[in-house]
Image 1 (tube, rainbow, N blue to C red):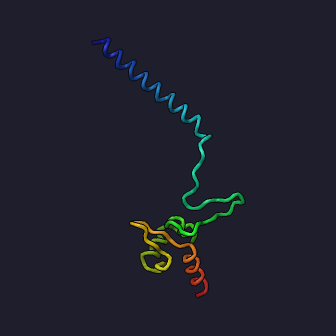
Image 2 (tube, rainbow, N blue to C red):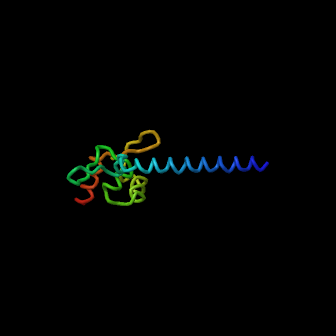
Length: 108
């Protein structure tokens, strides 16, 4: 019975050591891992931000420099209907239509 307890203890020690070694190996490789671009925009080499032709709601809120909640209110109120396209359960927003909406708001 005592022997069985020692084997359980030693087995746990081996598993713990394997976890520590694995973590150290993974942590050692992290600086080599490429970072993913921000979901809001992609920065170019000159530091400017470039947005694609179609934006997610998060990208559109960054484009407008407003909180996502405010953008969702604009969408729900119908103010951005000309810019919104439904793709399944998600929506995408035309950057050109969004810019035209901005221009019309500035002009009025």
